[in-house]
Amino acid sequence: MESNSTNMENRLSRTDGSRSVTEQILRVVAESDGQPSEELKPLYEAIDPDALTALFAPKADGSSRSVGEVSFEYAGYWVTVSSEGTVELDATDQ
Image 1 (tube, rainbow, N blue to C red):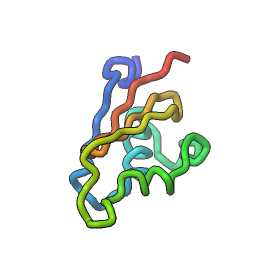
Image 2: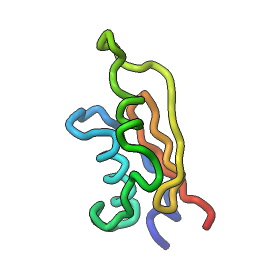
Image 3: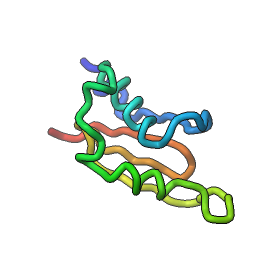
Image 4: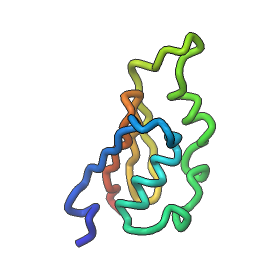
């Protein structure tokens, strides 16, 4: 079976800071599927990447967002991104 069948959750911390939230989503999905991120359908077909980035950007005063998450369906996964810096995948029933 595929790795996403045996491990239904895959989390990636954003502590690195060198990758945007959208880059991290693509990386986690690609790794879970065992394919290059360039072969995934465009993220903008599932969610507005600019809005997603703005949602988790620091507040106007520079402080981080302390609470919040957003979930959406993408590439066969239910993707949940949190303000705590995680990207979580759950395989959808297709």
